[in-house]
Structure formats: structure tokens, C-alpha cells
Length: 295
Image 1 (tube, rainbow, N blue to C red):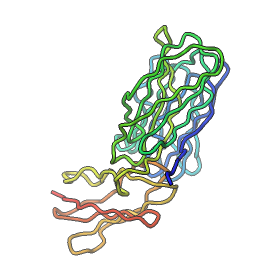
Image 2 (cartoon, helix red, strand yellow; image 1 turned 45 degrees about the vertical axis):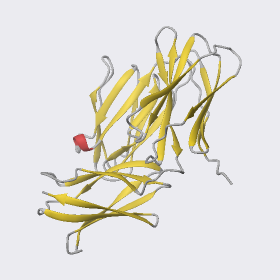
Image 3 (cartoon, rainbow, N blue to C red; image 1 turned 135 degrees about the vertical axis):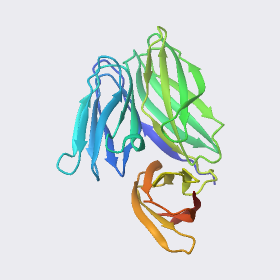
């Protein structure tokens, strides 16, 4: 019996009066999500989960207000209203390049997107969306990512521009076999050249040939005291990270917060002598290991 998996379905509206609050969690030295698509007028809400962090604007559109706010137990949230379209790059000033994120802010276009669904169809993904009130829309470009951050174009569908309800479909037949979770969004193009972006939706590839760990970097380790980890989680939990030396002795361990989908985090190893180590990660009964070379 084929398993039909509906992972991401949502109803959201784009209209002149619409504004939402978009939540970003701050924990384990990461912003979650690290990339968010929002529209002008939305409010961004950063919520502290654990640790001592900061959210600080870096490269933002001209005319947009900068921000710099610490997040910890007694100052556990910060709000920012976006007023300009464009790309907003920000980071945690405490962890800098280890903890960066992006807001893609677009203008509101004359279309109402009433649903966006991603469904399994065998070993492919079917992206379906519905609209009403289409006026002067040129096309819908489908974007895909294996990490929820870096997206590429995988197809385009021409708009019909009917005021009544419209249903669109696109089948992604090129999902990499190594990608357990895949992320999609729509880039909606107006005929005058304006763009707006839908929210990002996730899809679980049940045919993926992948373990718990997607990648570990750097390896070999040269002149640094941390490892960047990208790993998968089927539900929220804690990833146990353990580092063993060549004799099997435990050198360092930590727990990283895990959300459903692709997770990014970093593991502080401390100063390590040159040699061969084994990194073991455990989550929800699943284990994965990597040989780590320190030079």
C-alpha cells in the first residue's frame, strides 16, 4: 500500500490589509527558521528558548530601521515591524558567523493565495496552490531547498488571471535521493515586475537514503574548536552529541535542540590534540557516527 504523506498544508492570505506576526525561535546558537519569507507590514517576533544570544541587523534595505537586541531569560522576546521590501541579513553579535539568518521581505501583490499544499505522489512531490482575485499576475516560480536556506528555481507556471478560484499544480520529479526533508515556496511575479514570496513549506521524502546526519563540517578540523552539524529530526527533541578519542574515551558531549526537519547547530569541541576521533549523534533512538580528523 502506497503511503500518501501530506506534510505541509496551510491557508494564508495576501491582501492590502493583511499583516501577520512571524515567530523565530532562538536557541542552541541558531535562529529557527534561519530563512523566513514575510511581507511588508509583518511583525517579526524573536523568542528566546535558551542560552545568551542577540539579534542584530547587518545588511538591510535602505531606509529600514536597524536593530540590536539581547535575548536571555529575563529579556525573552523582541519585536520588529518590517516596513521596506528587500533582503534583511542579521546575526547574533555574540556568535557572529556561527549564527546568521535572513528575512526575505516582499511587497503585497494583487492576488489572494488561499492554500499551498505539498503532497507525496510516489517518489515525487506534488505542489498545489489555490488563488482568487488574480489581477495582472504573470507567473508562479517554484523554489526548492534541501536545507531551508538556499533555494533554487525548479519550475514555473503561467498565471491564468481569473478572479474566480484557480487551482495550480506542479510535480517535482528531481528530489535528490539524499534529501530527507525538502522545502518549497512560490515566487509570485506581477506583470509590472514586482515580486512577492509565499511562506516556506516543508516536505518529507520517505524514499530518501540518508541517516541522522546530513553533514559535519569542517572535517578535517584545522585551527577551530567547533563543528557545524546539519541533521534530520522527525519530531522535536534533543540531539545527543558525543566525541570519543581513538581509545574510545569520551572527550566532550552536549545536547542540541532539534525541530522537525533539517536542523543546523554547532558543537563546541574545545581544543583537541591532533588525531582521529569519532563523533556519535543520537536522537529518538537513532544513531549516526562520523570519523573526525583533527590536524
